[in-house]
Length: 149
Image (cartoon, rainbow, N blue to C red; front, side, top):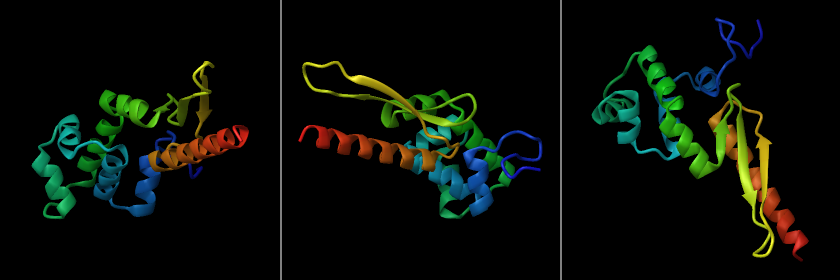
């Protein structure tokens, strides 16, 4: 069986590959919350838990079942709030295939209309997608500085 598929044959998500490397579902949940900049209270509300429950998980005072945390991660990743937040703040969105893509407008000055670009990021992992987006933006800014002298 391919390394990119899970037991049911479905494609692995970025979270599943992160879990395979770290092994700690609470750490993965914490990482998703930090990467997206969502407040813990809002994340807990989306997942259907009390904020105090999340805080106990993160502090280590309470150790949840792996299935419970995986359900929380899934509901958080698939929520409309997270989708909109990623699009508005980070200019990335998740395609139906699970891969992330970036959409951005390049400003070409006050008298010219900006150019809208869409670039596939080629990953299902949120951390990698954000890193690749940063690299693309840095390259575009560097190209803009070079062309303007």
